[in-house]
Length: 181
Image (cartoon, rainbow, N blue to C red; front, side, top):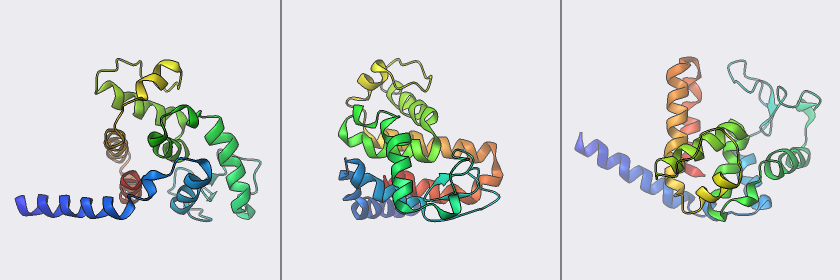
């Protein structure tokens, strides 16, 4: 068992070194390229909660968008206005911008904020976990460790798969993405 734990830790350290460059991205133009890489192209998986998507833009969230013919530039425009600007990404410390934006894209703003609020509360922030990115939450994010946010993000996915076992086929990808951002 100890050997297995050491192997797991070794694997995580190797993954962390491989992706350390990605963690330095702070601007929308840098971060969006990583998000688009994770989101991929056109998918219409009936088991995917997002339904029909292209570059991660879901038909359910954007019913007026021609998802099948959405271009990369069109997706970037949607991400900038509806996910980056609207979700106040630049109000956070630079080191948290990538993970917060990625969670907004992958999990929705309310859920992303609740994950960050829970992570901050584990350090004694005393926040109301309401999914609102107001001034009190923004202030509590200062000094919040990115690894703590990652841990709470992974916990969210594990809890989700426990509640909805049919989503388990997505778990490893979600887990990997959580560690890479």
